[in-house]
Structures are given as C-alpha cells and as structure tokens.
Image 1 (tube, rainbow, N blue to C red):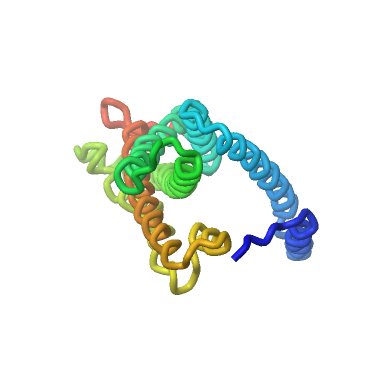
Image 2 (cartoon, helix red, strand yellow):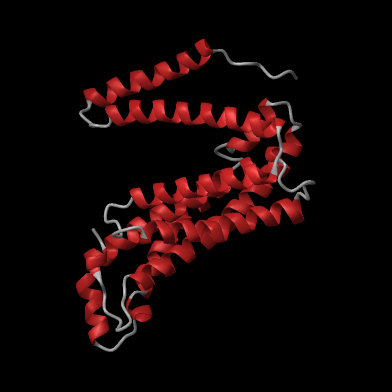
Amino acid sequence: MQLISLSALDLSLAAGLIVILSFVTVAFQLRIARKLILYSIRMTAQLLAVGLILKFLFDNANPWLVVLLSFVMLSMAGFEVQARPKRRIKGLAGMHISTFSMFLSSFSITLLALFVVIRVDPWYTPQYAVPLLGMMLGNTMNGIALATDRLTSLFFEQREKVEQRLLLGQSWQQASREIRQDCMRAGMIPLINSMAAAGVVSLPGMMTGQILGGTPPVEAVKYQILIMFLIAAGTGFGVVCAIWLISRFMFDERHRLRLDRLQ
C-alpha cells in the first residue's frame, strides 16, 4: 500500500481542532488556552525542524552527527524534567541528576538494542538510532518528571514526619524509604497502564506509524513489543536512579533533611 502524503491543508484542518478546543477551555475558564495554542505552535516548529535534521542525517549518515544530536536531545530532556516540578531543586543540581539518570538508562539500553537485539550495521544508522533513542528519552523523561515532582513535594509536606524519624536515630535511607517507594511507583504506574492497555484499548504510536507506512502488521507488532520492553526497562531504571540521587542530595552528611535546597 502506498503511503498517503499529507498536505498543509490537511494539517491545518487537524490544527483547527486545537483552536476549537482552546475556545472550549476559555468557556470553562480553565486558563490553559494560551498554553494550548503556544505549545501546539512550538510542537509544530520542533517537529518540522527535526524532520529537516533527520532528512539531512539520512542523506549523510555520520556517527559524530548522530552522537551530537543524541546529546542535544538528552540535554533538552534534562531541562524539561527540571522545569516541571512544583518545588524545584535550586541551581543545576536537579537537571544534572535527571540528565545523568536518563543517560545511564536510556543511552545504555538504546546501545544494547542497536548492538545486541536489532544488530544494526552500522550502529549509528539514523533510521534506527535516532527514533529509538527519542522514544527512550521521551518516556524516561515523563517517568522521572512525575517521580521527582512527587518526591520534592512529599519531602516538603512530610518534613516533620521525616525529621522525627531522623531524631529517633534512623538514617536518611530509613526515614525516607516510604516516600522513595511511593515516588518510584508514581513514576512507573503510567508505563504499567500503557503496557496493560496496549493492543486491547489502544494501538501504540510506533506500531500505528509502521502500519500506516506499509509495514506488515505482524512485523510492526514485533517491533512494538521490543520497544515496550526497552521503554519499560529504561523508565524503571531511570526513575530508580533519579529518586535515589535526589533523595541523597536532599540529606547532608549528618543525615539532616535540607529543604533549603528547594526553591
């Protein structure tokens, strides 16, 4: 089946739905119409820019260009994670922790998939490396953002409880164990829900795109199963790493809770 090309008019019709939705949010006084329009425009510009970059990479496959783009994506993901929590960590520490956690999980699992599972030759083939890393970073970023937002909020809201446990002689690990466990679950629950609904309630994005592009359904399903496993592992490892590092950062060497490190 030949891929049906979309025109600017087709995309404009779809964008019209966002405009209608923004009017609905104004009618209900949700105060998100401006963000809805702004981020829709931002998303469109970002995707068009990425499309041009990927076209250039596909035509000029170069390992250094792929690595450079990968680190730019990682840096942007780290910035987005730092910007989302209600109570942020002061300075760049939060961004460093989230970026390191995503690097440790997303990059390692992406390389494992490229070298061991898919066995792409060469490994930096843009058609595989960039989309795979993008999916890994996107999902890991969402999981870490949810978990860290909850972590800093709970430390602030339950500071008296944590400090009482510390006064009773517990270490920072013991005093914060329940909070850390709760935040790790919060970061992984959306992923578990998406795995439970995949194929029954919804058709995942990658699988849908491949089918629309003409890939045989069974082959598209195989790739989607692989991606779901990789995303689950990457998100889980990233959340655990970020929660542990931020929790350690929130306590000093004398096991005191340092809320002054939040803003």
